[in-house]
Amino acid sequence: MIELDVRNDEAYALAEQWYDEVVFTKVISLEKSPDYAALNEELSELRAKYKHVALLLITKKPSLIRELKNRKLRALLYVQGGNLKINRAALEAKVDALISPELGRRDSGMDHILARMAARNDVAIGFSFSPLLRANPYERANMLRLMMRNWRLIEKYRAPRFLTSSAESIWEVRAPRDLMSFGIALGMEIPQAKASLTFFPQKILKK
Amino acid sequence: MSARPKTLPPTLRDKRRYIAFQVVGERKFTSREIKNALWETSLRVLGELGTAEAKPWFIKFDEKSQTGILRCDRRYVERVRFALALISRINDSHAVVKTLGVSGTIKRLKMKFLKEFGWK
Image (cartoon, rainbow over all chains, first blue to last red; front, side, top):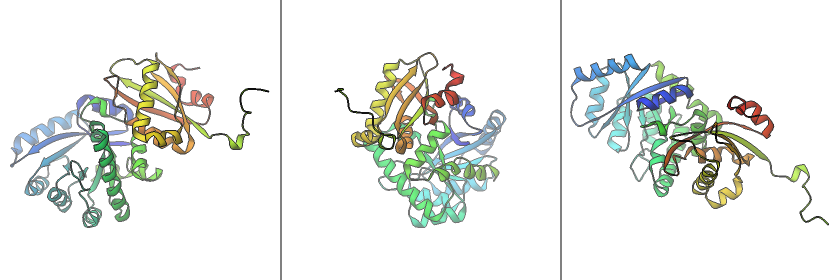
C-alpha cells in the first residue's frame, strides 16, 4: 500500500506506520517563476529527510506548469486541479499527477477529452479524501457527486488513478483499507480500489 | 406463551458482519462518546434510510486500548467503513477511526484483530 500525498511532518510519521511507502508533498503556490536555486536546495533537504518527495504546484498560470516540468527537478510533480485551463495544461505537460480536478468547482473539471488525454499522456488523476473532511454536508455531497462522475470517465478511458488522503495534518490521515472504502463509495470495484493504492502509485514512483 | 417472537431460522436471519476498529485521538474517548459518534456519522453519511438498511450497531468499546466492535449488515460493510472514515471530530476533539478488520463472528474477530490489544 502506497500513500502518494502527505503534506505534514507528523502526518508523514503516522502514515509511515500504516503504509509501506509514503510520499511527502511540498506545497508551493506560485504566481511567477520561483527561485530555482532555493527550491532545489529545499528539495534536496527534504529528500534527505524523507524517502520520496513530491512537489504540489498550485498556480493560475499554465506556462508555469510547463516551466517546472522542463526544469527536471528531482521530485515528483503534482498539480492541484480546479481550474479548467490548469487541468488541461497539466495533462498536456505530462506531469506525474493531477490532484482532484474538481476541487472548488461546480462541475467536475474533466470531460471525455481530458480523460482520454490523461490516459494517453499517462498522467494519474488523484482522488483526495481530506477536502471531504473539511466540507459541510452540502459541499460534501456535491464533491462526492463530482468525484463519482470523474471516476466513470477515468474507468472508461482507463486513465491511471490513485487514492490519497492529501493529509495536511495528522488528523486527516486515513488507513489504506479505509481509503479503499472511499474508492468503493465512488463506484470502484474492490480490486480496482486496491489497484489505485498499489499498482498505479507504484507505476508513478518508478518513473 | 412467551412474550417475544420465536428466533428465526438461520436462512431468514439478518446476515451480519462485525467490524473491529481503533480510535486514534487527541485524548482518550469514553464508550458513550464513541457510540454517539457512530450513530451521528452513520445518520449523516448514509442518511436515515441508509442507516436503516446498513443496521449499524455499537457492540463494545474498550476504553483502555481505544478499540471496539460494531455490527452491520454484510452488504453494507463498505458503506459503514466509509462513514467511519469520515469521522474527523468526536466531541470537538480530533480523532481518526481506523478499521482493523471484518469478521462473521465476534469470537473470530477478537482472535484475528483484537488479540494484540489485550482482548480475550
